[in-house]
Image (cartoon, rainbow, N blue to C red; front, side, top):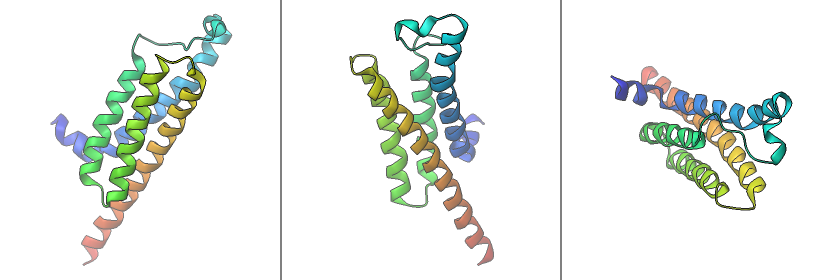
Length: 134
């Protein structure tokens, strides 16, 4: 049941996960700074330890199922490339002193994942409409 839902709604799950990730990465530190000053030390605020890896897991799951239905190799490559870029930027940001540019890279890859999922949805719908009209 869950597997069939993942197959059917992989792109929507990927978009939702990416949007939630962006909200987390952009809004939560601001709220923490305003509310309690937790971000005053320059550290990134977390809902729970390892929350970024939760978003990486959502990303890889959604990309795995979405790429199986992708209409072109370019879409598949884009989905996987930006998912791996996102995972690497998150992983490396925990071990690097160059933290800021890696966070920007993760934001960029998240936005690119959202765009790639939307393009995949559009291509799948176009293919389905061509099949129905033939």
